[in-house]
Each structure stands twice: as structure tokens, then as C-alpha cells.
Length: 213
Image 1 (cartoon, one colour):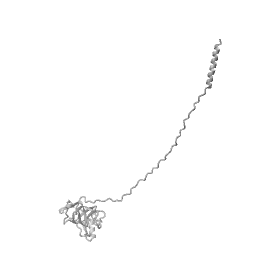
Image 2 (tube, helix red, strand yellow):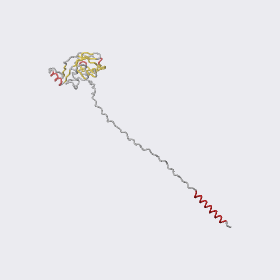
Image 3 (cartoon, one colour):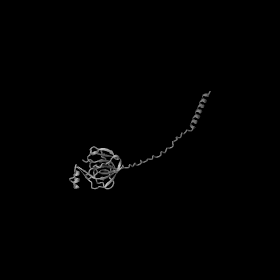
Image 4 (cartoon, rainbow, N blue to C red):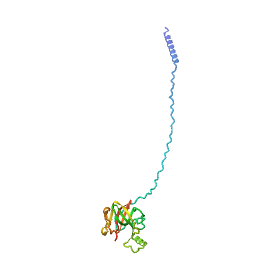
């Protein structure tokens, strides 16, 4: 029998066919797909805005002189002290010029009293060494007594408004202790030696009787 050879031949042919098929099978080509290139937009650099700082503002120094409020304070038998510009006289002196009596402390004589004003004769009151100097200058060196001298060379009468609620300091009966009155009930006495008017904002706010030994 020759079967084994036939089987061998078939196996050889089959193997050859199989090899041929494998050789003829085209190779599968896998194409490499490249991702599309991503275009990155260029970065825009923004320049920082320039910061301008305004220089500090220097305020001009104020030239306004604060107003002064005049007051008697505690009344005394001694006259008010001289104020700058009084030319040696006590209080504000006696040279305010014509017109309304300006703010200050003024000596003189109350000739009459109204409901809201006084009729006032302005004078100069000198005390201590200033009294001797002023009296000598006026030719009355021998008339200075008790340390004071009054000069009244101008008898013009001024109408001076009085503020509502003004205070009056009086010496009843020649006493040296002051009493306090409201202007509305005060009546100047004929024997009063003289008075100090305290003027603020164009009106009298206080009146003080001057003591005379």
C-alpha cells in the first residue's frame, strides 16, 4: 500500500497553499494620525498704567485774627488793666476814633440810660505812675489824688447800644463790695464817679461802676 506517501503529499501541498496565502495577504498599514498643530496666540503684554500722585496741597496760613471777647470777670475796685494800644490809659484807652464805640473796655460817664442804650461821654482813666505822667503832660501835676487821673478833653456824647441781658456791677452807698444787677433794672445814680463799658460786637455786654475813695 502507498497511502502514507499520499498523505504526506497532501500535507505538503496544504502547507504550501497555506504559506502562499500568508505570503499573498497584504500587510495592514496603520497610518499614524498626527494631531493638528495647536496655534497658541501670542501673549500680549499690557504695560502698567503710569500712576501720577498729585503733590500734597499746602494750605496757605490763615491770616484771620480771632476776635476777642472782652469781659470784666470778677469786678474790682481797681480799674481794668491797660490793654494794648491804650497809650498808657487803663482799659482800651480813649482814642477809638469817631463813630460807633468799637469792641473794648471803655471808661466814661453815663449821662442817660434808655431801654436798650446809654448816652456815654468817653474819657481817659490813668492809674498809678501813668496818672502822674498824664497829669503832668496836661499841666495838672498837682491834681493827682489817690493814684488816679481822669482826662476828658472831648465831651461828645455817644449813643451806645446795650445787649439784651447785659450785667451791671454797682457799688451801693459807696461800699467796696459789688452788687450785680440786670441792665433792665439798673438806674445810674447822680453820685456815680464813672463807669466802664464792656463792648462786644457793637453792643455793651457789661457795665462796671468805678470806685473812687
